[in-house]
Image (tube, rainbow over all chains, first blue to last red; front, side):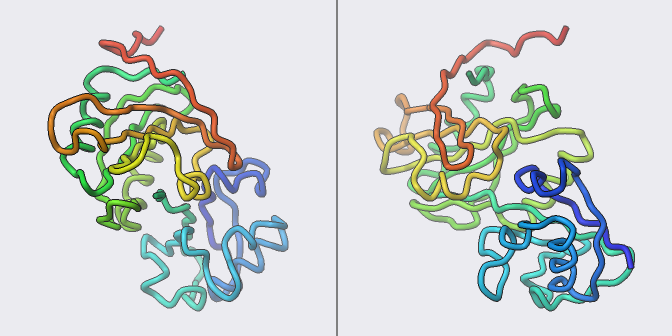
Length: 90
Length: 145
């Protein structure tokens, strides 16, 4: 099951510079485990404790996963996942 | 050094003054790898706050998809401080996630919504390290060779 994951500039140190990588999983949580297996260290940049980091946005087919079940969001073959750090500050 | 044309500089300042006392934010996009701040894109501060800014997550995705389609990147990421100096706050430093961008800070603390000079400063923020850089305002960006 192939899911394309778009990687933001700041996380490309984990993907040898690749702008997108392929992963698999039936849910976002499983996909992140799969990414971690191939790109060690990336999980910690996405997840804090049991949840997505507050200032990391993840979209499945253009939908912010915060509105679709967070890490439990289900995935299917051909889905496109995009990771974007928030543009935010004080 | 940040090289910015007068019209874009003025547009950033105007946006900051208009949104005062809330923080204003946006980017200036340019062709990937060019370091040319060409396309001014003001964004809504979804936080609507005098002490915080954040792009709306759906608008953020739309913006990046547009840039990817155009082979662009954020050359400048700007926001305003409305009660403090134009220097990155600890939050700004902690959340800075575009190591290639010029982070522009504008402070409207002196004149608010009114005419009058503002502080306009530019920084690189990489791995938590802040480096201020010179800002060169030009009439037009240099011609492409």
